[in-house]
Length: 289
Image 1 (cartoon, one colour):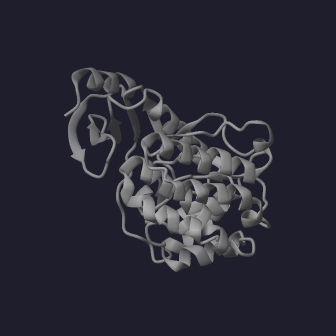
Image 2 (cartoon, rainbow, N blue to C red):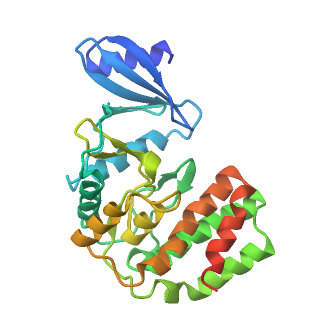
């Protein structure tokens, strides 16, 4: 159960008394609860007193950004404080027959929502790792430069600090730096709105049987990065990709570029969880030798 101070704040914000609280499983960073109010509303509360004070505010801003195209459901932000975020509660439903087709089409429509520059107006987090989004100079208009500096190089520098960088990894990152223009050649597009961390654990099936996006790490970038992440821990249903491609066809040789986008997340897992991800990182780099 959460503390009385938080309880009082929520009751003041919602103008309704909390009549029941249910602890929810699944969160690896924060504690989560279903809250039922006297006015019969159900809300979702995520609470954490130890993480960076801006983490929930960045999550709230990401959810609001994902909702802007109005093509795929994201939970409405009710309130956000340093220690908690209060959201619309998503009632779990049963997948409609065309769930993955609808999901793929909606996700493609979200990617059609673009920005003039790569990155985002603020930095945020990928898991509990800072994600650096504010572009410098050339990075605003050059995806290759943005992606290498703000994603691959940033994670490698963290790996150096954490003691995971070997000569083998240094050589691999140097190789990518010298070859990334060639690897990403032909994929140039306007910056798309990206969820940033979409895998099976970061969407839910809502009461309408459709997908709801949660826990984003939002920025504007090449949409291939979002799709590669969906394949890192086991692909989504093939209908998802087929439907996506019908709405917003991918550039030629997309599959060739997948590994460099997976690498960002694998390096992040190396930094968060340790050497168990080292071999996978090296394997992804070597796929371009």
